[in-house]
Length: 457
Image (cartoon, rainbow, N blue to C red; front, side, top):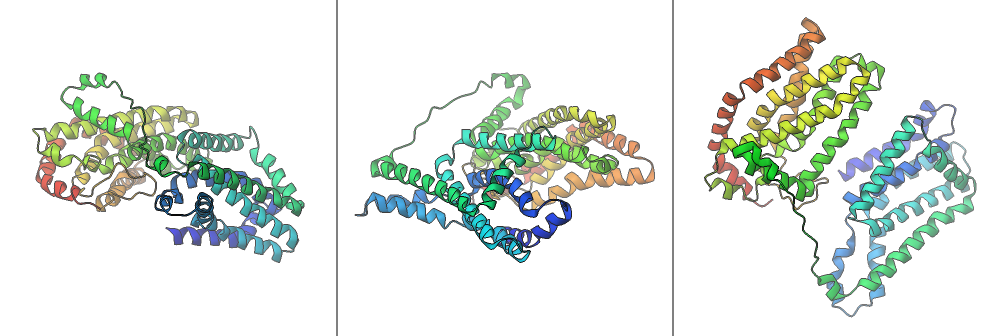
């Protein structure tokens, strides 16, 4: 992954100047880059929030040694400056800067601009120390980023031009490159004081306490025998970051429709609209459903040792996913603004997801044998990923596209949409038979699953 990111940024940096000239022939490339630097900074904060592991956790062994707290604090902060995340942006900054110099831009201005960006990178690094793992700050930054992009996209307010003017002013006056470097120094000092004042062995060993909140899930009892399993899944999602992230991601990707529906060419391609419908209404189905029953791997063996009906267990999973498809479809209804055909395709996609993709998902996940640790970070976490997860992508998106494409080719796209909806309805009508077959398959594979989930990865 690191090599891929380095290669991508390196290629971007090398060809960025020419690409900007092609896309913005009337604008100076340095001005275009400066306009979007603010988005790069905000994205850096979000990216580091999840990805950058701070070296603070490595200081406990040093606290028992005759080393001054000042040296320890400086060591920790200096070590963070050598992070891969600080070096990574240089792979696009340096090639782009070399291109600027080759094209005749003032060397002093370019070098000062590079120093300013390095100062911003270090500032983000030290700022990450202060906000790391503070959810309120994360959501604030995310809201600002999404809001700024939305306002910019709909021509309501141009954040990029305001901050772009500041960066252009900095580029035109090389002496101002000292400001980002000074900012990095100030943040370094703030972190230094904080670390030095909190470097005590008893403080580091103090057990973290927090208030436990509970949720009233009594309303689930109306679902009868599957209620206990629904309660278990809802608690699992609420209390653990990785499954909770699947909910947030599914909701966020509803906005993906703006990419498809605001493009006039895509609106004329029904198969692309079908892809969008399956994708948006089935994101929770795909993201959460692929790891059934691995979400319960830590206590799956205990469950299988109890008198728990496997059929009810599977019905609870299907019920939760069906509910998610319905909710996500309702959230896509406003896209009817782009045409009634969009609503019809999304409705057909939702029916297909419920009637066909849910049973298909449960059949494929019966091959899951890899454990999922709910305490692990949700970002860049491929734990539990196996052949079943990769295989499911093909029928999830490919099969409906194939059915629709062939029907549209032979007859019309309207018939294709109707056929997908009909398949979904048939799947719902014959769900009882399908679930009997899937339940038998789960029972046959029960011991293989238990053995696989007990293996520590």
